[in-house]
Image (cartoon, rainbow, N blue to C red; front, side, top):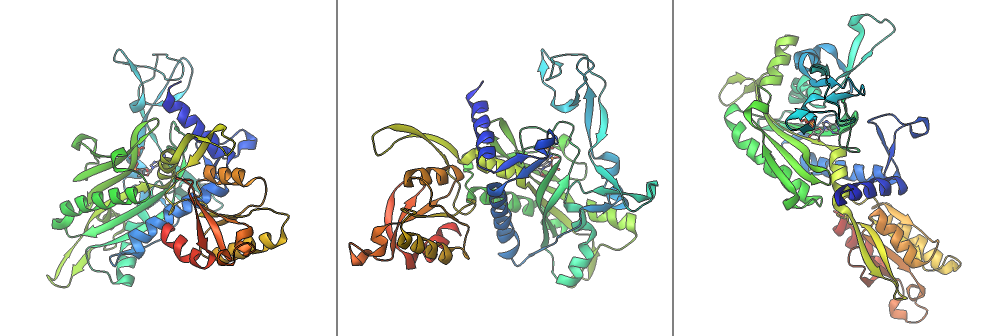
Amino acid sequence: MSSESQRMEKIVSLCKRRGFIFQADEIYGGLNGVWDYGPLGVELKRNLKDYWWRVMVRERDDVVGLDGAILTHRAALKASGHEDTFSDPMVDCRTCKVRLRADQLPEKNGVPQCPNCGGKDLTEARPFNLMFSTQMGASADPDSIAYLRPETAQSIFVQFKNVLDTSRKKLPFGIAQIGKAFRNEINPRNYIFRSREFEQMELEYFCRPEQGAELLEYWKNERLRFYENIGLPNEKLHVLTVPEADRAFYSKGTYDIEYDFPFGRQELEGVAYRTDYDLTQHQKASGKPLDYFDEETKQRFIPHVIEPSAGVDRTVLALLCEAFAEETVTDEKGKSETRTVLRFHPRIAPIKVGVFPLLKNQPALVEKARQVQALLRPLMNVFYDETGAIGRRYRRQDEAGTPFCLTIDFESLGERDAALRDTVTLRHRDSMEQERVAIAELPARLLLAIA
Ligand code: ATP
C-alpha cells in the first residue's frame, strides 16, 4: 500500500475514533455515499461555513444571503437544464455487474476496464440522471414530482427578483447561500469527497456583461485567498483553466480550484462565468421578468453572473488531510513516542481551548478551572477535562486539533508566589511550548488568535 493511501486510512480511522465522521446508518450496514458528522466534525464544518459566510456576506457591502428550500419545483429544474442533461455517462461491467462512471474508468493499454474485477466486457455508456426525485402530496401522478436540489444555485436565480426588490442592491452584487445538495452519484468514493448528500457554499455574483471577464479573475483570486486563510497552503492549491470543450456551452470561462489530496489532485471549487444563461432560462420558462433596470443608463437587461461554487465536505476533507501529522516526541522520562496531531488553523479548529485543573481531587483547583471555563465558554468552544495525567490530556487535545490548553495549578491559587495568583499555564499545540498568562488576559488573547 502506498504511503499516501496509508495516510488516508489513518485519517479515516482518526475521524471515526475521535468523532469527526461516521458512516450514515452504520448499525444497519451503512448507507452508501452518505455520512454523518459527529461532535468534533460538526464543529469543524460549522466553523468553515461561518468563516465563509463572514468573508463572503457579512464583511461585504455587495453581497446578501439566502436560505432556499431543498425541495424544488420540477419546472425550475427543467428550465435550468437539469432534468434533461444533468447526467453522468454510466456503464455496467458484464462480468461482475457493478455500475461505473464511463468517464472515470482506468485503462490498460488504452482499453477501459472495470476497476472492480479488471474485466473488459463493459456495456455501451448511457446517460444516468443524477437528480433524486420525490413525490409531493398524496397522489402519485407525474405532476406531483419534485426534486431534491442538485445544487443550491437555482433558488438564487429563481428568487433573483425578490431579493433585488427587497434588498435594493445595485449591480454588481451577489446572493450567497450555504446548504444541502443531493446527487445520485454512480460511484460515491474517496470518503466524503464524493457523496450523494453534501453541502455547498455558493455565491451568484451578478454584474453588467462588460464586467464579467474581470470579475471572473477577481473571484478566482478571492477564493484562493480564502483557502489560504483557513490553512491550505498556496503550493497545494492549483487553478485549472477548464478547456472550452469541457465547459458548459453557456460558460465564457471556468476555473477549477484543486487541492493535492492524498488520493490525487482534485476539485474543491468551481468558479464559473455563467453569462446570462440561468436568468434567461427562468424568465423564458416562467414568463416572469428577471431583468435589471439600470437607473443611470435607463437600460433594461439580464445581468451576467459569476459563480464561485465550493463544497463544504470536500473542504472539510482537505482541512483534515492538511492538518494530520504524526511526529516522534520524547516524554518527560526520555521515552520516545508518536504524537498524532491535527494542526488546524485556530479559526477552524473544532475545540478552541482545553481547560484542565491539574488534579481533580483538589476542590480549589477544580473551582478555579470551572471559573476559567465559564469565562471563556460564551466566547468560544471550550473543552473541560479533569481525567488522567496532564500529558495524556494534552495528547487527547492534540488529536482533536485543539490549538490551546490551559492548566490551572497550585501557582494559579497564589499559594507559593502571590504574583502568580490568577495566572494559568497556556500550552501551544504545535510548538508544545508553555507560558504563564493572567486569566484576565485570556479572552482578548484567545479571541484574537481564533478570529
Ligand atoms: P465533479 O466533477 O467532481 O463531480 P462538479 O464539477 O460536477 O464536480 P459542481 O457541479 O461544479 O461539481 O459543484 C460545485 C462543487 O460542489 C464542487 O466543486 C464540489 O466541491 C461540490 N460537489 C459536487 N458534487 C459533489 C459530491 N458528489 N460530493 C461532495 N461534494 C460535491
